[in-house]
Every structure is written in structure tokens, then in C-alpha cells.
Image (tube, rainbow, N blue to C red; front, side):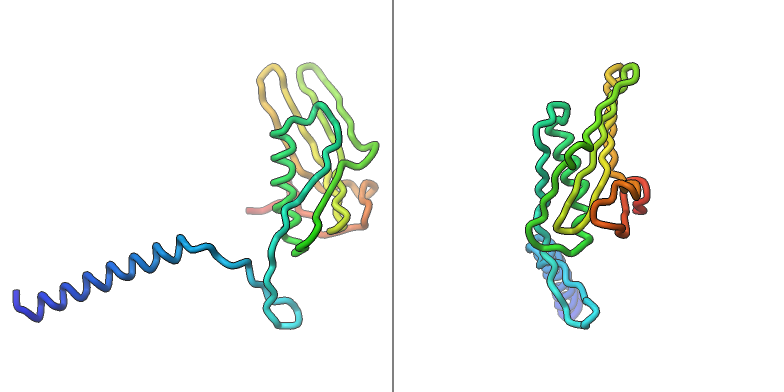
Amino acid sequence: MTRNQRLLLISIGIFVLLSILAVVGYLLLPHQPTQEKKNDGDPHYITYTPLKIDFGSYPDLQDTDKTAITSGLQAYVDKTGSTSGITGSIRDGSYKKSAEGTVITIQFLIDIPSVKRTYKINIGRDSSTGENSLYILCPDTNELKYGTFDCVDDVTRKE
């Protein structure tokens, strides 16, 4: 191998090594908030505020239910672009619990006033199999508190 071939090989090796280090470094750096263009054409940075839900004192709601509901709703609320004070609560009088055989069903509405949305929560527990289900659903029209919105839920979501 000639001296020029060796230098070329070393140069290519150094280039590949630096490229790999640059990609790994980029992937490890924290990234800025998402940038979206609104109708005025200027970029706007969207930062998301964690959703806080007041679950009240319903003993049948487990901590795992509360966490799953909050994180599930967060995904839907993030799409609204709201950046401050996102809170929700269980609508008074909407909490219903029923049992049929070994299956317990809990249903209630969560109102999120800052983004003017309502979602229906449906939790199912089967004590004989230990299976649990939780669905975040669009409310029926008679359950809407803030008017209609482009509702996407666990049933209509396309991924």
C-alpha cells in the first residue's frame, strides 16, 4: 500500500468517526420545543404545560387509573396548542359505577375549561380475570359543556 493510499484510508476513517460522534452528540442533546407555523406565517414555539386533573375523592379510582387518564388526556390536549393553566375535573353528578356479575364499570365526564373540551372516561374491571380497561371517549352531544370540537378519542384515533 502506498503512502497516498494510507493517508486516504486514514482520512476516510477519521471522517467516518467524526460523523458518528456528531450524530450521537446531536441525539443526546436536549431539543427545543416544537416550532409550528401559524396562519400569519411567523414561527411560534409551542411549549406544553402538564395537565392537572382534580379527581376529587372517589375511592374506586386507583392511582394507576388517574395516571393513565392524565397521560392519555395530555396527548389530546397537547394538540390544542394551549400553553398555560390546563386543569380539569370530574363533572359533578357524572360519576356512575355499576356492576354486572364480576365486571365493574365506572364512567364519568372530565371537563377541561381552559381548552373548552369534555371527555368521557370508561373504566372496566373484571374481578374473575383481573383484566382492566380504560377508554377516553368523545362525549355524546348532550354531554358537551363547551360546544362541539374536533374530538379524537381512543376509538377514532388513527396511528
